[in-house]
Length: 602
Image (cartoon, rainbow, N blue to C red; front, side, top):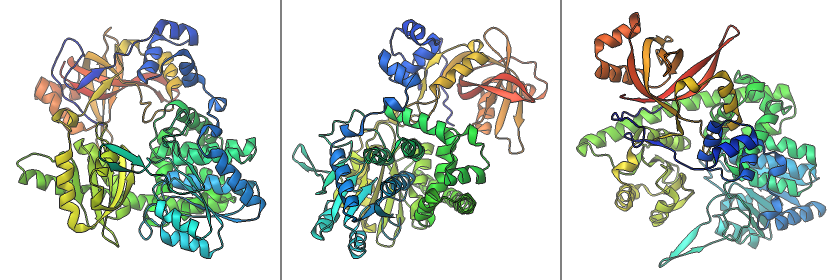
């Protein structure tokens, strides 16, 4: 949780790096039409939802509002090829990817093809020995096994030479993917390159007519499964892995994705799927309370751990398992792997920070615009997670490189104003392999080119100092007194939360702190008693950097007053905050609780 300190101002506008949304609409009309508060109407508009039909879909969209699969270029062709292969008894192989999106996409396609009588199996590349996506060995293995049709999922769009090899070996190939289309630059022009597959289904195609291109690989697979006429009940069940992949692949929860995730979560909360139920149980979660948070930070990482530290086939096998007792044992193994992954990740983050801080000293306190850190001892499967943590800490693009079996492998995570795929494309001659999208990328390269990569990325980078400052985007400057239990309940209409549909951020100036206590043995939270703008008492929690907040309060109000705040109270220390309202239930009694997310001087 980030803390932004800003200068005082009578208004919230441009308060340091705090910015209030100023999007316009007829909020009263929206409120009256949909029987919601004008505040909720404003929050919906702040999420770039415009027009009455879009608001309806945002609030009440159902499976019936999802776009027709046929709108995707080559979708009908792909379905006909699969149906023809099944009719002729051909052996079909799904080739997926080792992350949650690839695992879920593989499960969806294998399950769907089996339902309609296909002879199908799945191959998922090993992260370390195979690397991402199709490779020649996978193609040769498929030919040796008598495979006549390959269907990729969550990969394939950048595998032109591998697909050409498959075609030369008399195999048909269908590509289903959602990644950017690779291109070559000819002067100022970009020449986009589609692989020579029998069908290429990717909503990022320039000639695609699908209304929403921001779907993940598993959703593309789900759309293809629909085209195979698997039946309504089976379609409903496959919404669950499609929703899991959408959350875990960090797709924006807008438009169709929002409906997919909401409908998927609804079904997961009452799922009979043995593998999902087992994962929920071994992680101590309550099935009826599963949210996008639990999927993204508990369930997803367990599935991901198999592809990172062992083989993604472990997770796929769990999803395909029909026996609940066996599924529980398999889920427990995945949880143990994920626990190990967490420890290894922490070690990687510590090493990366040490490297960056050492560089900082050498450069006189100036951080590079793009952080490129080489950690030879870091497990290559954890590079992306470590890069994400480093990106969050320093608020700039980060690429973590590790020593692979053949050269160097790495993963990058970006910031909002830096298109990582575009920038890496400018130096692609340094890579033996690379791919990705605006916010993330993966690459392989020679160790001797690391310094050159670092230099060129920083030289090419046009980000200014303002781009590196953490920004707080406020939805509404709203007095805490407005918050009631009914209002908090109404906010549930905005769920599920995630990228592109974040939790609302409210702000109030001069909240008065009257008493405080550090909670828990670890001291990672503070509970405040506050007075709102109407001098009414409320509870306010803070779960960020406690030491940093205490230091800030002492600098602002003096050590003596802060000590009194934590001893007996009876003080009135003003603090400007951003917050999110919640309901705290203790022994059956519900009370409104304010969750402070950022703070600054009043």
